[in-house]
Length: 54
Image (cartoon, rainbow, N blue to C red):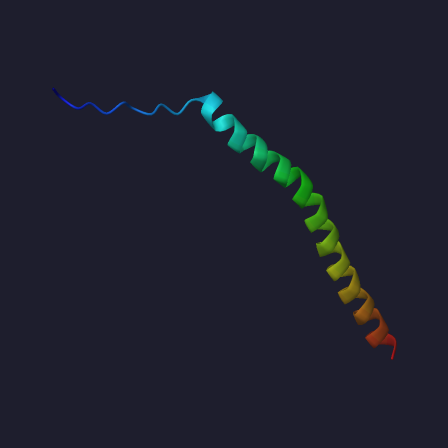
């Protein structure tokens, strides 16, 4: 008797939960990241303006 190994087929249905999880994570993290980056840029600009007039 010969042992055979069945092939694992990757299809769109197999990968869909992974892509959905990545997309939902990105939809959450990108606005938060943009807000944090904008805060840091705003703080650095305010510091430059204050030090310019002092």
